[in-house]
Image 1 (cartoon, rainbow, N blue to C red):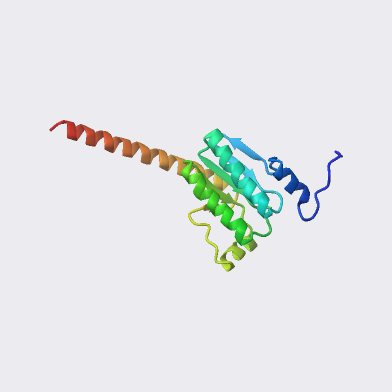
Image 2 (cartoon, one colour; image 1 turned 45 degrees about the vertical axis):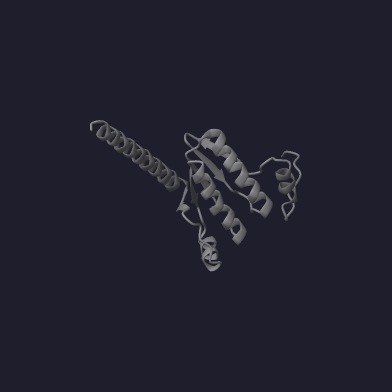
Length: 162
């Protein structure tokens, strides 16, 4: 057993770590993707710090996708739901997709009852399905990019032959 300060029920220890810029939620890199597994209840400041950490990691690693595992979360309030949706929109501007995995039925019900939409955020039942979804999305983006480039090349050829 290590000598570690126990976390209080209201998350004060985690909050103090977050305020120091030390995220208590690890962000792992697997190939072109980041994996974020939230294993503790999020409070508002921690959610904001996590959002910032995810965006910084996307920028630093040029990750094409992020899997956010919320299977351990028993509840998501309107603020946390909005942070997740906003993070996905911000990640999209950094050319990265977010998939939320492991949502508990009670969390889904709560989001609907609160009238919250996660916008265009994709969801999957588990990490495996989320990973497959991100890979498929990346393949589609790559093929769309190639098709666009080919179309531009053809237009340039057509305009140059007049």
